[in-house]
Image (cartoon, rainbow, N blue to C red):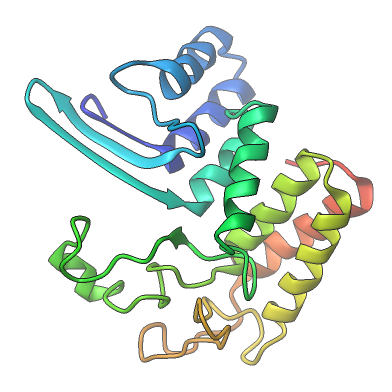
Length: 217
């Protein structure tokens, strides 16, 4: 977007540019996200969720930790080795990978906080539920891949075991789990939906990548 950047989308776009061989565009994007005075998302510890409307006096920043975007930045090489290690350290420090990998964000967004919007009432009103720091094993698969990328194979093996445990909670391959208790669909949000193909697919990818000790995407 001409006025905004989100780490989730930028990581995907960077990967797309590299796959298409658009080296110059990819390099420019990487410079912007990591170093630009006005538009960078890197804050020294991790990539912030978004910057929006960096336009004259208007500027909004979502500086919470968004798991999927940060993990994709590692897996897709938007982050360098030093940045990647800092992101993984931040996850461990704040136990974002517990009780299972991995919570969607940190910290939770509560009603009345500066990040709160009323549209969160649709799906993110309750902390540790759904997208408000709920556990999504799809993202957990990217966590395993990020550990493999950094050659942290022992940690990746432990994370994969926890991921398998989470996916085997009934209903199998639940859409999401409570970020505090680890129970599938611990509210009426999500309706304890199981059989999620994207969670199963990411588990297979993480498993096969660990077997070969290299990220297969």
